[in-house]
Image (cartoon, rainbow, N blue to C red; front, top):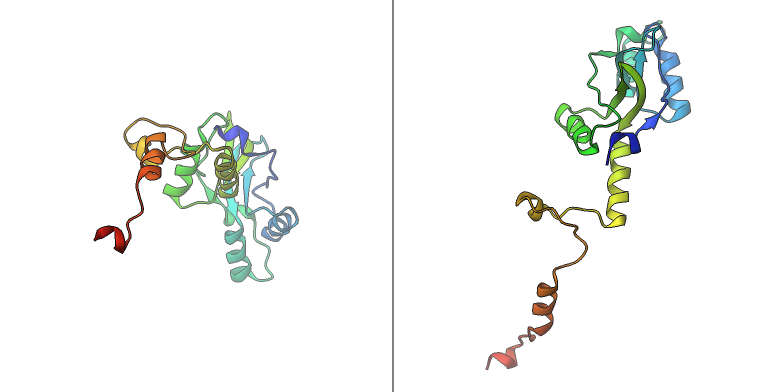
Length: 166
């Protein structure tokens, strides 16, 4: 499961000089919560989250504020060929909801926690969930149903009642 299979390709992007109100409108129109910020050459320079824009709206009210003033510089990124689990762990470890996907420094997509949830649900539906205990022991296997021995043991075990104890 690679990032490329679950990312949103060709995301909406912003320029550093864009007004925060324009960015907020763009997010609301397209249902996004994170937007990469790129320079004139298309190179990633930051990322802005919806919460950053809401804070800016509260602090700056009617003023015009550029994205460059509220964006996060040095955004944590991933690549299209990164395993989805690594991208998800980067989001968890850094307490962020999305990662720009870059190739050669240029934004080719974005992967968000929603994309990771979708991948997880898809894997669950396909029965591709790895049994946790098996994974810890280094023996990953599909978790679809109990092993045959466990099913047989449960089937053979008689029910215990108060009358059976006497």
